[in-house]
Amino acid sequence: MATLDSLGLAASSFDEPLAYPGRLPASSFLLIDDRLLPLAGTDERPTVDSGADPVCAARLAGADSLDGALASLAATPMGSRTPVVAVGSNAAPAQLRTKLLGHGAQPVVPAQRVRITGLEVGHSAHVSRGGYVPAAPFASRGARAELFVLWLDGAQRNAVDATEPGYRRQRLPEGCTVTLPCGRGLAGAEVYRSRHGLLSLDGSAPLPLRSQREVVGGLRERLDAEGPPRWPSVEAFVRACTGSATLRGWVSARLGELGLVVPDHLAGQG
Image 1 (cartoon, rainbow, N blue to C red):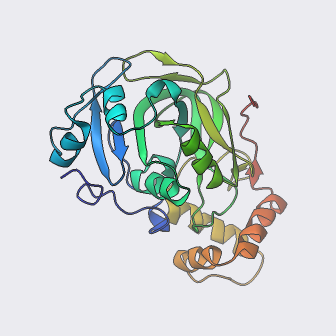
Image 2: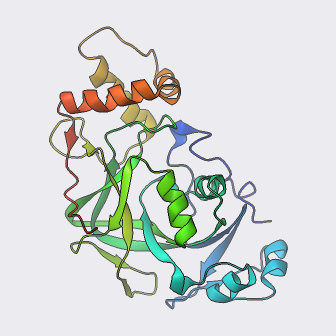
């Protein structure tokens, strides 16, 4: 059965902050609550492969097109959804499901793996409520990345917005291009941009996305450089930040004071 648990995708970053951004699928998928179906086909409207999951096959009543599957689930059709680039844990099915259910949105989301130019992924200059240092995008001329685009309806966008207080959702700037698996360009994609700026442990350039142990370890060293150690381990730092909004605010302020925050150079698109 293609449940998140059977695929090893059931743990979210809320459960395992040091594993952020969590385990991501290898290819395009359709999330249906706690189940995952692969999306196939090379055209701009992918097909759904429900053959490996009898439960989903029954629920979809034999529908193989993506819009047909969405209709069988009484879900919003593709034409009424907005493409939103996921640069961090929003691409992890368990994290996405948790966010949607927590804000009353239907956990049915198509996600396509795409190629993006002009964009790189680093870390926001803050610590999240989950205790991890989350991902954030920044403009980078000539950069190439493979990321997921989530196709979200209005209620789902509102739900994810509510879980991203440190970010602002906006259109990708003109210097960034998105290419779908079929090779067609995708216009109008949005992305969550950090309100805190980008973390830079050398004070000059954004730190590219690293494991949490590496980024939190580097952060601890810089924060402890001017006094006695405050946290004996990475785990202790994560636990302390998870339990204290005051500490998280202090970390953000201190990063600015130390000159460890740089701009993302993403021109605002509204």
